[in-house]
Amino acid sequence: MKKISLLQKIGRFIFLLVLVNLIGWVASGYMTDDTMAWYWTLPHSNLNPPDYIFGPVWGILLFLQAVAAYLVWGKASPRWFVLQLALNMLWSFAFFYLRSPGGALVVLVFFILALMANIKSFGKTNLLAGWLIVPTLLWAFFALYLNTVLVF
View 1 (tube, helix red, strand yellow):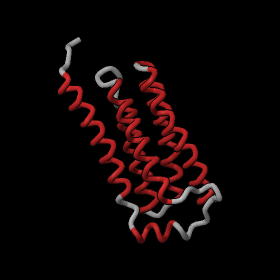
View 2 (cartoon, rainbow, N blue to C red; view 1 turned 180 degrees about the vertical axis):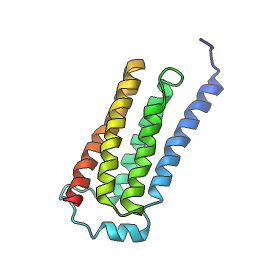
View 3 (cartoon, rainbow, N blue to C red; view 1 turned 90 degrees about the horizontal axis):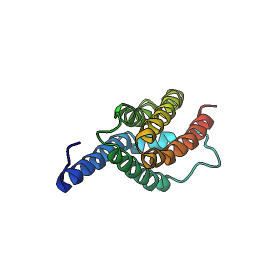
View 4 (spheres, rainbow, N blue to C red; view 1 turned 120 degrees about the vertical axis):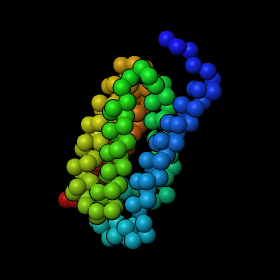
């Protein structure tokens, strides 16, 4: 295996941090004042966290995902990782931009399946990398509950 320099390692990690945060930034762009006003008219669960919780939680989750992807760079297929990122962004599009909690619920189920597949894929190569995706899966299950309450 070809040895890579420290600069290349840092570059890879920065690339992954930028990638996951770009996805988060695009996804958050669907949350305008107008869509948030609409969102708060919906019937929420008593367990719904306040708005200020989501930014820090997603910041941590995206960081963990970047670390996980870094640990398996060139050793595991990135397809499930890329798919989970795309579905994460698609959920925000479906929920906020299209104002479709039902559509977002469908996307969320596929997001959870992609996360599970990614945990398995990353975990085969690096156990820690697989475990670093688990908090996102747990948050996604919580989101599934919250989204389901909004639909039904």
